[in-house]
Length: 169
Image 1 (cartoon, rainbow, N blue to C red):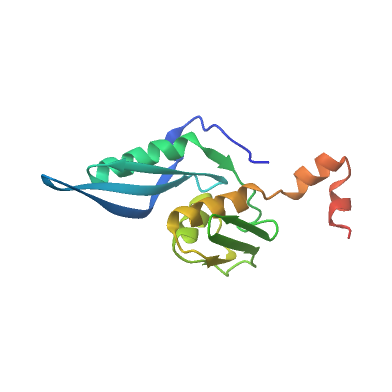
Image 2 (image 1 turned 135 degrees about the vertical axis):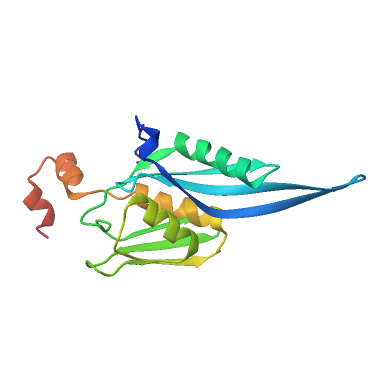
């Protein structure tokens, strides 16, 4: 159900660093440091992607992460600055719950989830992460929850009914 999307212009994608990790390899000649950076890119209008870059320098790791993120972009429905409905997802040990919020609430989320939600263009949302706080798994779980969301127009189209029937309960 993931909606892979291609973006014609990469200039409108903004990248955001979620986490950086210094990895040490100890050899006979001493220590070798490398860096792993998880990066989120989004256009602020419903398109989001994440990537992991590894390199000997921080800037190179971030650049590799941005390139990897541009390769797996997904489209997310954003209605009036919030999500259309509640969503729950898990990836590894990370569990995420995302709920719509009224206008003016802001992004009530922590750490890695906040970076993803702000990059996708959501301005009002309530989010809770449970279980693992590993930023890699949190980002993947958040994007999975967002990618599985459906807007009312899509539901009405799939069912072959009028948009007003979707809201009738």
